[in-house]
Image 1 (tube, rainbow, N blue to C red):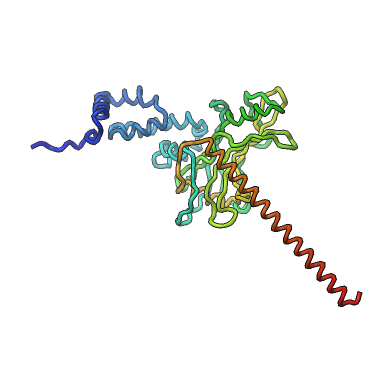
Image 2: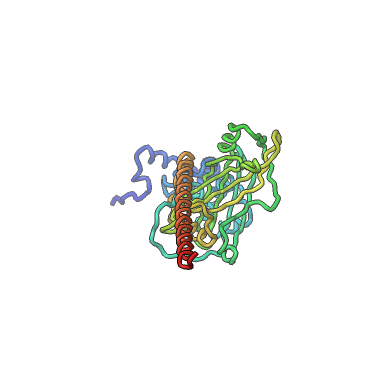
Length: 341
């Protein structure tokens, strides 16, 4: 009696069936060493859906470890390796969480996430695609100072300078544009408790400008996400700020790389609120293909909203001050009248 063919190839079109059958004739070691190791992450993930054989071969952790550490050299750090080893799916999960752009713009009903004792930051900086700087930072999140203070994570030590191959120019606006387009930053945050990760940097800069007083260069990377329902923190943005210094004609040095979170009134979000927002974003946020134009547009709209809310707040405070001054004057006149002056 003929049995139904339950192989994966029965549901594939003829050309894919033939291709899959051809692959099946090759030894798995040949496929692994000569084909799969040449693929990037997106192509490897697509290849995993071809058949059960390809899924088994394409989900091997050594492939994803090579791809992930080549993309983010910071993941070679022993701290990062230890954290990733405890995550189901290992490097494949990290790549899936951190390679796309994070979008978390909607509120969902959910139980509050369990508190995490620390956050792991894997930071990588590149100039024209070549690594300039990599570091892993552990941030304790259950200290009183962290709860009460605004979120602020520094990637560099005090007075540490990172040299680059970029020549410092003071007045050339084209140079600022070049810096915006060629200096990129990745900031992956890993929650060891929830075993999730997210890249909270826009990768390419959304703004490059000079500080009006120090004339240092500040390059900004941003990722917007949903905050707390209602009020100024309903929408927030993570900002990675890179501060550069140097002498004209000499090498550009990176002086600061830090992560902060701001609400729509430009106020810094506290550490406690920031961790909760980040955990929800990791858990519920969509992952989409990185789109620099879209990210820059979102940043500019957020900046405009921030400016509008600040101006509205200033007008309210000014009106309140005028009313207070008027009432005080009326009270003084009334007192003088009753006192017979």
